[in-house]
Amino acid sequence: FRLLAVAASEGRLPPQDPRTAEVRALLLDMFVNSTLSASGNLQEVPSFVCEKYTQALANVAVYSSEWPAGWPQLQQQLLEAGRGSRVHATLALNFFRNISEAIQSDEIFRLGTPRRKALQAHLRDTSQELFQFLAMAVVSLFPNAPELERSAVLLVTELASVLPLRAFLAADVDSWLRAKLLGDATVRGAVLEAFTELLAKDAAKDFKDAPERMMQ
Image 1 (cartoon, one colour):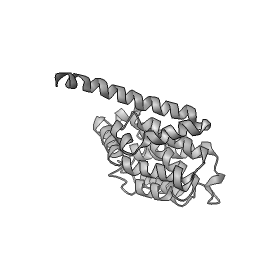
Image 2 (tube, rainbow, N blue to C red):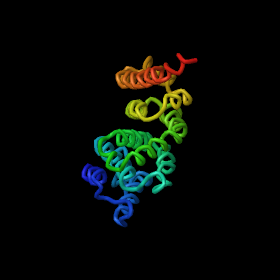
Image 3 (cartoon, rainbow, N blue to C red):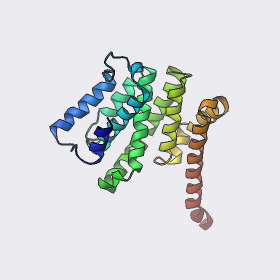
Image 4 (spheres, one colour):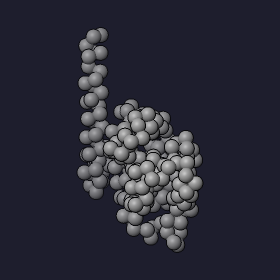
């Protein structure tokens, strides 16, 4: 998976290549039909393998599919399959975290600014759907799952550099983070980092808006 992620980011898996289409189909099948595990039980897959898998899937989506337009069914299938188990939900959240990291990476500039902005716009436009899935997974479907909760907090941290602050406020993400900060010591450090990112974005917005307010 590590080599696949590198190959995608280096442009060695062009979107139009039929072999790339086969890779995309295989990666999606590993998630949707749990074939990432030989037994079909994703709980048997080591966490470091799951992390490398989601990184490879994210890189292929960013660099080798022209996603979302070039792979329109991907996001919906991931979110649907993410309801199947705690591991599926964790993989889905980690995928979007890796997408956010890819948008901020140096390699993304090889694709050009329009591609980076298109990816960022897609995350912004679908952020409420993503946050609804996050809340459903960690609160309703799979509560008290530390690995899943940590993935959720890390995703929020990365998205804080990609999405506008209003997207988090509209989804009441800050309230959920406060609850985790007060109630769960295992993710407290990650939650504090997420809050720091959100506060930094809030301060940056205030600074940007200050001249306009002073003119009023």
